[in-house]
Image (cartoon, rainbow, N blue to C red; front, top):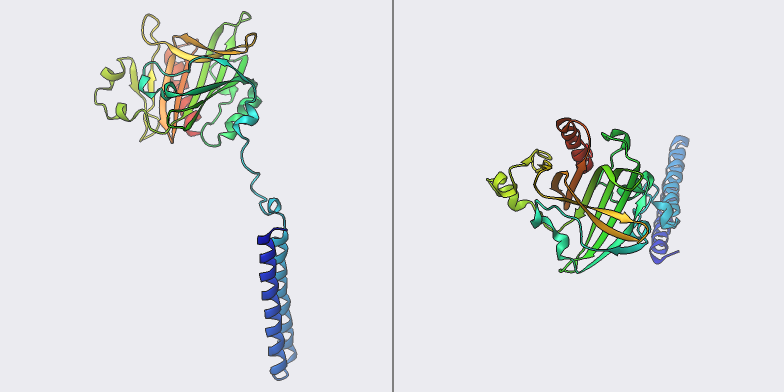
Length: 293
Protein backbone atom coordinates (compact mmCIF):
# COMPACT_ATOMS: atom_id res chain seq x y z
CA UNK A 1 0.00 0.00 0.00
CA UNK A 2 1.51 3.37 -1.02
CA UNK A 3 1.61 6.57 1.04
CA UNK A 4 -1.23 8.14 -0.92
CA UNK A 5 -3.57 5.20 -0.30
CA UNK A 6 -2.64 5.08 3.42
CA UNK A 7 -3.40 8.78 3.76
CA UNK A 8 -6.78 8.35 2.06
CA UNK A 9 -7.68 5.51 4.39
CA UNK A 10 -6.66 7.50 7.46
CA UNK A 11 -8.72 10.49 6.33
CA UNK A 12 -11.75 8.28 5.59
CA UNK A 13 -11.42 6.54 8.95
CA UNK A 14 -11.22 9.85 10.78
CA UNK A 15 -14.31 11.17 9.02
CA UNK A 16 -16.19 7.96 9.73
CA UNK A 17 -15.44 8.04 13.46
CA UNK A 18 -16.34 11.73 13.67
CA UNK A 19 -19.70 11.18 11.99
CA UNK A 20 -20.55 8.17 14.13
CA UNK A 21 -19.54 10.09 17.29
CA UNK A 22 -21.67 13.07 16.26
CA UNK A 23 -24.71 10.86 15.60
CA UNK A 24 -24.33 9.16 18.98
CA UNK A 25 -24.14 12.53 20.78
CA UNK A 26 -27.32 13.70 19.11
CA UNK A 27 -29.08 10.48 20.05
CA UNK A 28 -28.00 10.78 23.73
CA UNK A 29 -28.99 14.44 24.19
CA UNK A 30 -32.27 14.45 22.32
CA UNK A 31 -35.53 13.41 24.01
CA UNK A 32 -37.10 10.07 23.21
CA UNK A 33 -38.43 10.17 19.67
CA UNK A 34 -41.19 8.37 17.97
CA UNK A 35 -40.37 4.97 16.54
CA UNK A 36 -40.43 6.27 12.94
CA UNK A 37 -37.79 8.94 13.72
CA UNK A 38 -35.53 6.37 15.41
CA UNK A 39 -35.70 4.23 12.27
CA UNK A 40 -34.82 7.26 10.13
CA UNK A 41 -31.78 8.03 12.30
CA UNK A 42 -30.54 4.44 12.17
CA UNK A 43 -30.97 4.20 8.38
CA UNK A 44 -29.14 7.53 7.90
CA UNK A 45 -26.19 6.38 10.00
CA UNK A 46 -26.03 3.05 8.14
CA UNK A 47 -26.03 4.74 4.73
CA UNK A 48 -23.34 7.22 5.82
CA UNK A 49 -21.10 4.47 7.12
CA UNK A 50 -21.65 2.40 3.98
CA UNK A 51 -20.58 5.28 1.75
CA UNK A 52 -17.45 5.88 3.79
CA UNK A 53 -16.52 2.21 3.77
CA UNK A 54 -17.03 2.06 -0.01
CA UNK A 55 -14.67 5.04 -0.46
CA UNK A 56 -12.10 3.34 1.75
CA UNK A 57 -12.42 0.11 -0.28
CA UNK A 58 -11.89 2.01 -3.53
CA UNK A 59 -8.85 3.82 -2.14
CA UNK A 60 -7.31 0.55 -0.98
CA UNK A 61 -7.49 -0.96 -4.47
CA UNK A 62 -4.30 -1.25 -6.56
CA UNK A 63 -4.02 1.51 -9.13
CA UNK A 64 -4.40 -0.87 -12.07
CA UNK A 65 -7.79 -2.00 -10.72
CA UNK A 66 -9.07 1.54 -10.39
CA UNK A 67 -8.78 2.25 -14.13
CA UNK A 68 -11.24 -0.20 -15.58
CA UNK A 69 -12.06 1.63 -18.81
CA UNK A 70 -8.50 2.44 -19.84
CA UNK A 71 -6.59 -0.51 -21.26
CA UNK A 72 -3.28 1.28 -20.76
CA UNK A 73 -0.86 3.13 -22.98
CA UNK A 74 -0.72 2.13 -26.66
CA UNK A 75 2.16 -0.16 -27.64
CA UNK A 76 5.43 1.64 -28.20
CA UNK A 77 7.29 1.91 -31.48
CA UNK A 78 10.03 -0.48 -30.33
CA UNK A 79 7.50 -3.18 -29.49
CA UNK A 80 6.67 -3.51 -33.17
CA UNK A 81 9.90 -2.61 -34.94
CA UNK A 82 12.77 -4.46 -33.29
CA UNK A 83 14.92 -5.54 -36.25
CA UNK A 84 17.16 -2.76 -37.50
CA UNK A 85 18.41 -3.15 -41.07
CA UNK A 86 20.58 -1.27 -43.55
CA UNK A 87 19.23 1.66 -45.52
CA UNK A 88 20.11 4.80 -47.37
CA UNK A 89 18.24 8.05 -47.95
CA UNK A 90 14.59 8.69 -47.17
CA UNK A 91 11.37 8.84 -49.13
CA UNK A 92 9.86 12.26 -49.87
CA UNK A 93 7.91 14.12 -52.49
CA UNK A 94 9.92 15.37 -55.45
CA UNK A 95 7.31 17.95 -56.39
CA UNK A 96 7.25 19.38 -52.83
CA UNK A 97 10.95 19.30 -51.94
CA UNK A 98 10.63 21.96 -49.23
CA UNK A 99 8.50 19.54 -47.24
CA UNK A 100 11.32 17.03 -46.95
CA UNK A 101 12.19 17.52 -43.31
CA UNK A 102 13.82 14.10 -43.13
CA UNK A 103 16.65 15.50 -45.23
CA UNK A 104 17.75 17.34 -42.06
CA UNK A 105 18.16 14.10 -40.13
CA UNK A 106 21.42 13.33 -38.35
CA UNK A 107 20.89 9.67 -37.54
CA UNK A 108 18.49 7.56 -39.59
CA UNK A 109 17.43 4.09 -38.47
CA UNK A 110 15.72 1.65 -40.80
CA UNK A 111 13.66 -1.31 -39.67
CA UNK A 112 12.57 -4.50 -41.37
CA UNK A 113 8.96 -4.08 -42.53
CA UNK A 114 6.19 -5.94 -40.73
CA UNK A 115 4.22 -8.27 -42.95
CA UNK A 116 0.48 -8.86 -43.06
CA UNK A 117 -2.70 -6.92 -42.49
CA UNK A 118 -2.82 -7.72 -38.77
CA UNK A 119 0.59 -6.11 -38.22
CA UNK A 120 -0.45 -3.06 -40.24
CA UNK A 121 -3.61 -2.70 -38.17
CA UNK A 122 -1.66 -2.98 -34.91
CA UNK A 123 0.73 -0.20 -35.93
CA UNK A 124 -2.17 1.95 -37.14
CA UNK A 125 -3.97 1.45 -33.81
CA UNK A 126 -0.85 2.45 -31.87
CA UNK A 127 -0.88 5.76 -33.76
CA UNK A 128 -4.42 6.29 -32.47
CA UNK A 129 -6.28 8.89 -34.54
CA UNK A 130 -3.34 9.77 -36.79
CA UNK A 131 -4.11 7.18 -39.47
CA UNK A 132 -7.20 5.19 -40.38
CA UNK A 133 -6.17 2.06 -42.22
CA UNK A 134 -8.16 1.06 -45.26
CA UNK A 135 -9.72 -2.38 -45.47
CA UNK A 136 -8.12 -4.16 -48.46
CA UNK A 137 -11.60 -5.05 -49.70
CA UNK A 138 -12.21 -1.36 -50.34
CA UNK A 139 -9.15 -0.95 -52.54
CA UNK A 140 -9.51 -0.73 -56.34
CA UNK A 141 -7.25 -3.80 -56.75
CA UNK A 142 -6.39 -7.01 -54.91
CA UNK A 143 -2.95 -6.78 -53.26
CA UNK A 144 -0.91 -9.90 -52.53
CA UNK A 145 1.58 -7.98 -50.35
CA UNK A 146 0.57 -5.95 -47.29
CA UNK A 147 3.33 -4.46 -45.15
CA UNK A 148 4.30 -1.47 -43.02
CA UNK A 149 7.71 0.23 -42.98
CA UNK A 150 9.25 2.46 -40.32
CA UNK A 151 12.16 4.87 -40.60
CA UNK A 152 13.20 6.79 -37.49
CA UNK A 153 15.49 9.82 -37.44
CA UNK A 154 16.98 12.33 -35.03
CA UNK A 155 16.67 15.84 -36.39
CA UNK A 156 19.15 18.70 -36.18
CA UNK A 157 17.18 20.35 -33.37
CA UNK A 158 17.27 17.15 -31.32
CA UNK A 159 13.66 16.16 -31.96
CA UNK A 160 12.62 12.69 -33.11
CA UNK A 161 10.87 12.05 -36.39
CA UNK A 162 9.33 8.80 -37.56
CA UNK A 163 8.01 7.92 -40.97
CA UNK A 164 5.58 5.05 -41.54
CA UNK A 165 4.73 3.61 -44.94
CA UNK A 166 1.64 1.39 -45.16
CA UNK A 167 1.97 -0.50 -48.44
CA UNK A 168 -0.50 -2.52 -50.48
CA UNK A 169 1.16 -4.12 -53.50
CA UNK A 170 0.53 -6.60 -56.26
CA UNK A 171 3.90 -8.22 -56.89
CA UNK A 172 4.77 -10.52 -59.77
CA UNK A 173 6.47 -13.86 -59.19
CA UNK A 174 9.77 -12.14 -59.98
CA UNK A 175 9.22 -9.43 -57.33
CA UNK A 176 8.16 -6.58 -59.61
CA UNK A 177 5.52 -4.18 -58.25
CA UNK A 178 2.73 -4.39 -60.82
CA UNK A 179 0.25 -2.24 -58.89
CA UNK A 180 0.61 -0.49 -55.56
CA UNK A 181 -0.73 2.07 -53.10
CA UNK A 182 1.55 3.51 -50.42
CA UNK A 183 0.16 5.55 -47.52
CA UNK A 184 3.02 7.42 -45.82
CA UNK A 185 2.73 9.52 -42.66
CA UNK A 186 5.48 11.58 -40.98
CA UNK A 187 5.36 13.73 -37.85
CA UNK A 188 6.66 17.28 -38.34
CA UNK A 189 7.10 20.34 -36.13
CA UNK A 190 5.88 22.84 -38.72
CA UNK A 191 3.41 22.86 -41.57
CA UNK A 192 5.58 22.55 -44.71
CA UNK A 193 2.66 23.51 -46.94
CA UNK A 194 2.08 26.94 -45.39
CA UNK A 195 4.01 28.78 -48.09
CA UNK A 196 2.26 26.83 -50.86
CA UNK A 197 -1.17 27.56 -49.42
CA UNK A 198 -0.43 31.30 -49.43
CA UNK A 199 0.81 31.19 -53.01
CA UNK A 200 -1.70 32.58 -55.49
CA UNK A 201 0.04 30.96 -58.44
CA UNK A 202 0.02 27.38 -57.25
CA UNK A 203 0.12 25.98 -60.75
CA UNK A 204 3.30 27.93 -61.49
CA UNK A 205 4.82 27.02 -58.12
CA UNK A 206 4.08 23.29 -58.17
CA UNK A 207 3.54 22.55 -61.84
CA UNK A 208 0.59 22.54 -64.19
CA UNK A 209 -0.30 18.92 -63.37
CA UNK A 210 -0.82 19.69 -59.65
CA UNK A 211 -4.22 20.65 -58.26
CA UNK A 212 -5.71 21.21 -54.82
CA UNK A 213 -8.76 18.96 -54.44
CA UNK A 214 -9.18 19.88 -50.76
CA UNK A 215 -8.84 17.71 -47.67
CA UNK A 216 -11.57 19.61 -45.85
CA UNK A 217 -12.81 23.21 -45.77
CA UNK A 218 -9.53 24.40 -44.18
CA UNK A 219 -6.73 22.10 -45.33
CA UNK A 220 -5.46 21.43 -48.85
CA UNK A 221 -5.01 18.02 -50.42
CA UNK A 222 -2.70 18.35 -53.40
CA UNK A 223 -2.99 15.89 -56.24
CA UNK A 224 -0.27 15.35 -58.81
CA UNK A 225 -1.23 13.41 -61.88
CA UNK A 226 1.27 10.97 -63.31
CA UNK A 227 2.68 11.98 -66.67
CA UNK A 228 4.42 8.95 -68.23
CA UNK A 229 6.45 10.97 -70.70
CA UNK A 230 7.90 13.46 -68.21
CA UNK A 231 7.58 14.86 -64.72
CA UNK A 232 8.80 14.07 -61.24
CA UNK A 233 9.55 10.58 -60.02
CA UNK A 234 7.68 9.11 -57.09
CA UNK A 235 9.92 7.60 -54.37
CA UNK A 236 8.89 4.93 -51.89
CA UNK A 237 10.45 2.20 -49.76
CA UNK A 238 10.97 -1.42 -50.72
CA UNK A 239 12.81 -4.22 -48.95
CA UNK A 240 15.53 -6.64 -49.99
CA UNK A 241 15.06 -9.67 -47.77
CA UNK A 242 18.31 -11.32 -48.85
CA UNK A 243 20.49 -8.30 -48.06
CA UNK A 244 18.36 -7.12 -45.11
CA UNK A 245 18.23 -3.67 -46.62
CA UNK A 246 15.67 -0.93 -47.18
CA UNK A 247 16.07 0.72 -50.56
CA UNK A 248 14.29 3.37 -52.56
CA UNK A 249 12.06 2.70 -55.52
CA UNK A 250 11.77 5.55 -58.02
CA UNK A 251 8.98 5.35 -60.57
CA UNK A 252 6.15 7.36 -62.07
CA UNK A 253 2.97 7.44 -60.05
CA UNK A 254 0.00 9.58 -59.06
CA UNK A 255 0.41 11.35 -55.73
CA UNK A 256 -1.60 13.00 -52.96
CA UNK A 257 0.03 15.28 -50.41
CA UNK A 258 -1.38 17.00 -47.33
CA UNK A 259 -0.63 18.28 -43.84
CA UNK A 260 -3.00 17.72 -40.92
CA UNK A 261 -2.60 18.11 -37.14
CA UNK A 262 1.18 17.82 -37.01
CA UNK A 263 1.64 15.16 -39.68
CA UNK A 264 2.51 15.12 -43.37
CA UNK A 265 0.57 12.62 -45.46
CA UNK A 266 2.01 11.43 -48.76
CA UNK A 267 0.09 8.87 -50.81
CA UNK A 268 1.34 7.38 -54.06
CA UNK A 269 -0.35 4.88 -56.34
CA UNK A 270 0.04 3.14 -59.64
CA UNK A 271 -3.09 1.24 -60.65
CA UNK A 272 -4.72 -0.19 -63.73
CA UNK A 273 -8.13 0.96 -64.90
CA UNK A 274 -9.74 4.18 -66.06
CA UNK A 275 -7.52 7.00 -64.70
CA UNK A 276 -10.44 9.29 -63.81
CA UNK A 277 -12.38 6.58 -61.97
CA UNK A 278 -9.29 5.44 -60.11
CA UNK A 279 -8.42 9.02 -59.16
CA UNK A 280 -11.90 9.64 -57.74
CA UNK A 281 -11.74 6.42 -55.73
CA UNK A 282 -8.26 7.21 -54.45
CA UNK A 283 -9.30 10.73 -53.39
CA UNK A 284 -11.93 9.16 -51.14
CA UNK A 285 -9.41 6.68 -49.72
CA UNK A 286 -6.87 9.45 -49.09
CA UNK A 287 -9.36 11.53 -47.11
CA UNK A 288 -10.52 8.46 -45.20
CA UNK A 289 -6.92 7.55 -44.31
CA UNK A 290 -6.24 11.03 -42.93
CA UNK A 291 -9.58 12.03 -41.42
CA UNK A 292 -11.24 8.69 -40.78
CA UNK A 293 -14.50 9.77 -42.39
